[in-house]
Length: 196
Image (tube, rainbow, N blue to C red; front, side, top):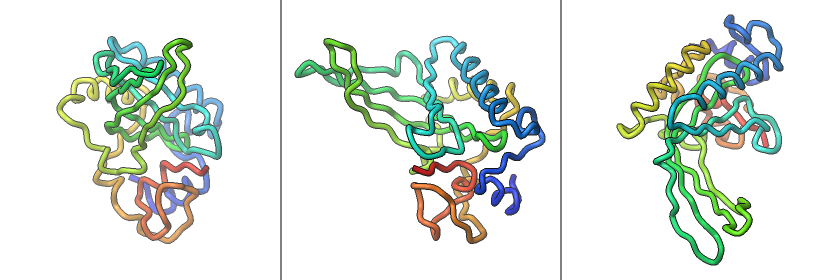
C-alpha cells in the first residue's frame, strides 16, 4: 500500500512506482502501456471493452476508465419515437496514470441511439469513484473478472482492495476531485481523481 508521502505525491500528479513504464516517469510511455493492456483485454473472447482516454472531455483524470461487458449483457430496453435505448451491464476498471495500480467494480451503462442514423443522442453511466460500494463484484461477473485480473497481472498492475480504498484519508490535503468534499476524502481519492 502507499505511504502518506506517496499518496500526497500522487495528489500532486507525481508519477511513482518501480515497475515499467512508471519507473521511466514518461507519460507517453505509460499511456502506450495502458493502450496495450486495453488491446489485450479486447482479445478476451466474447468481451467488449470501451475506454475513456480523453479525461472525460475536460480537466484532468489521474486514471483511464475501461468499461468491459460480455456481448450477452447488452440488451435493448425499449424502442420508440425513432430511438433505441440500450443497457449494458459490465465491469469498470480504473487504471491509474500515476502508479501501476487499478480498481475494479460493477456498473451499467445506458445509451439512447437514433435508429435512422445510429447516432448516440444520450446516455447515462456511473463511476466507481462516486459510489465506493461498487467495488464489489457479484457472482454474475466472477468468471470474466478472473480473466480481467489475469490481464492486469500480465501488465504488472496491482488490483487494489475495496477495503483499503474505502478507508478515510489520514491526513489533511486538497484533492482536485469532483466526487467528495475535503472532510470526506478516502484513500481512493488520492489515487483516482478527476478534476473537471
